[in-house]
Image 1 (cartoon, helix red, strand yellow):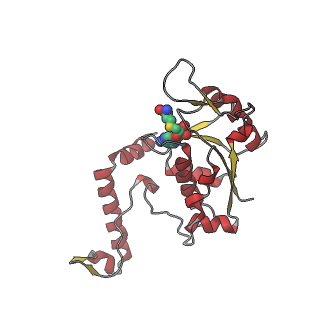
Image 2 (cartoon, helix red, strand yellow):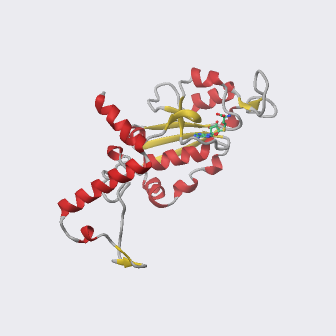
Image 3 (spheres, protein in one colour):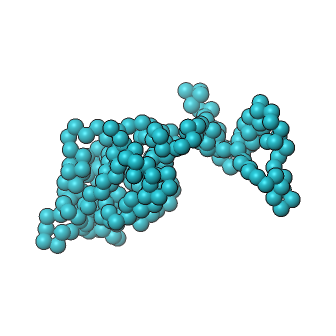
Length: 234
Ligand code: SAH
């Protein structure tokens, strides 16, 4: 069975959006994965079909109502559905390549896209929503975050990346950023491709790439190297 993504959103027209083109789009057409949107508003019961209300305790903005969202979740992910339920949220655990890889190995995901000031805490608790963040900044809604996460997952699904190297030497594998890449022409605006890459000596090339990756990571993201050391320490 292929990877199944269910998106709960107030703006289903945002999907598949950018996921309909290129690698993810072709994979979607082939049926390597599928995407279903659930309009949260369809589960509102009052005359105005309202999905949000003012925050208890006061303050700015509106909050997505627990009862409406809970009904939408129960519809999209009935009992027995083994897929993780994720809530896109700036308060969540930062998304990592490791988590992306784990999600890509599973059956799929149920993703709740927040809007307004966020969602009522009781639906997060009552429906076991795991909060996931795509970075330390605030978006106006969870949809772009869901698209980012799905893009990262889908490219790792079996058969999606044509070239079967499947990103072994990519950024974040082994907690390293990727080494610099070059392609023809040999000289661009007086900048040559480093000699070693044209040497044909694969051991030397591997060593150079490794050194470059380590130096780049130390300069830009020393936190990645620290994380690795700490993991090794246990
Ligand atoms: N008041 C909230 C922000 C709400 S932004 C707070 O201060 O934490 C509205 C919605 O956008 C959120 O419910 C969430 O679904 C989405 N969102 C915003 N930033 C995000 C991020 N960095 N990662 C994932 N989702 C995000």
